[in-house]
Length: 166
Image 1 (tube, rainbow, N blue to C red):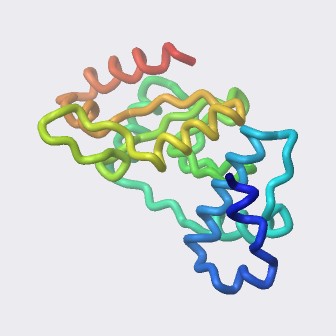
Image 2: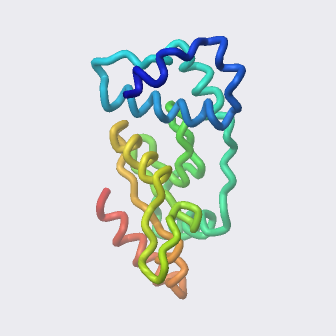
């Protein structure tokens, strides 16, 4: 499917793509490389342009992320804040030496659900899948769970429970 769809695109065509589209094509190319390592990605000749566009996206940490980071510091989970992997992924909090990360998922990481528990959107699922394929263990902290915690002790207990998966 990818080969038939993307093969006609040439290096000259990159001028027709906006940065966001190049960034999305980077995710497609990375997915292709990880899922089909024995095949050649049709736009491999544009990989550096894709990666440049992907890395151009500046992270914008939220107050929620800062709150979780502070709680992680309280419980002694040393981490890098907004760590960028060699592949260009920005991780909210990470321990690169063990490839362990915390992703704080605000409302934009979820589909709108009428009265039901929200479910992750496609972009969030793809990021998690790709990071997993790259050897990372990701623990998600959904905003609706974090916001239900009323004090530092509850936050600390919550994170200690979540971190058991590492």
